[in-house]
Length: 282
Length: 282
Image (cartoon, rainbow over all chains, first blue to last red; front, side, top):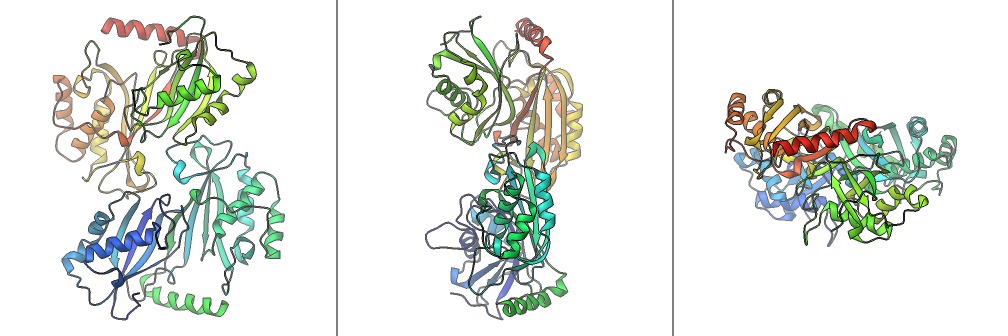
């Protein structure tokens, strides 16, 4: 396994992918993953070993979750020869080496000093598309839209979203992970009815813990179908325990839309701050 | 083969489909088609033979072409028993019998007297999505978006579209078919840059002859990349012969968006008028 070296070269990469054929971002033995696909493509273009490169993503996505604005950094070991002519063509070459329409690299640039795709991030933005009983089913967008058999009250769902904002312990929405904090700042959570009457949620937080987005969507669905009230959800959050009042919604409807970073001069500071804060919480 | 009978019952059906897995609307031996899929589903629900039903579509789509607002009618032989309770549930039952996400029925209603999905239509509307060199490639919409390696001038393409409108002989854009007219009224043809910088064309005509939409898009691409001028296209249309100045663009980017019909009281009149006009032209 390649270990981070101070003499390695770091690139910042933006990409998009259809999650359907993958078992998620993270590489796993004998399963297709976005991480393995991009690492193989990069190693192919750089004529280096997979052990010479290492990637870290801003928002690890689960199996079947899509991305339009994913960001990762890739460290290349210092003994790999990077000719300037090759560096200038990395975007084109890596896209070619991917040999698929399901993953697209949008930019591939040397990272500024101190940039870390995960720890420099200020916030992550996700979108959830849900076709309910009122929606006109659209086979062209079915791959990235979940369905609900119920008639859902989008306004009530939006009211819930707004009521959940702020700095809170979101344990009731997180799959437990030993030694990790579930305190997060939910910066935005809104629902709108879009074209074809599909409900679309936008969620922004400093970071999301595992299954948090899909659990927040599940809570909104339970409110939208009138099973529970906004106050019920707030009470459950206050109790801080998982509940069966709502389900974790399917991955299919979820898309990672983007990551916000501070200005170039601030990325190192932000990365250190995030690491310190995570350590303190752990 | 079932032949139209005056005692058969006619339904008007609206549907959407992803064209990718199909060899087009029209049924063909040993190939998957939308027509065969919907006919099998309808026959299954009605517990009748395939010979007892017959469908006619508003806009026959080629292999790989999608639809969001397709309309067809289906005639059911009079000896098939249609209980009212079943008729009320046809939409749900046929969608269930389709057993796929790639075809969705949006409405399934008894047709008004004299309605004919093909001949009563006033106009057909198509959309063509094209990601050119400026576009941000989007893997979530790649299935219904064609790509062009060129940087395209969307404004020039829109200028061409507007210049082509009106009643003309579109032979230069049509695959020849013996005994058929190529005179059509192009009611709208516009290009806009949409989100992600994808170029989207809207085309409306009373009817399109075979390959006409994709050929009109090909002409716009040749203008958009600066290979030929708007006047060149108009001159080619005036000559009325196929040209190699442009290509027929791939099916992947094309979606049948909708069909316009007159008010219920006028559909029979319109159908007779269309039939008379087509016969006169042949």
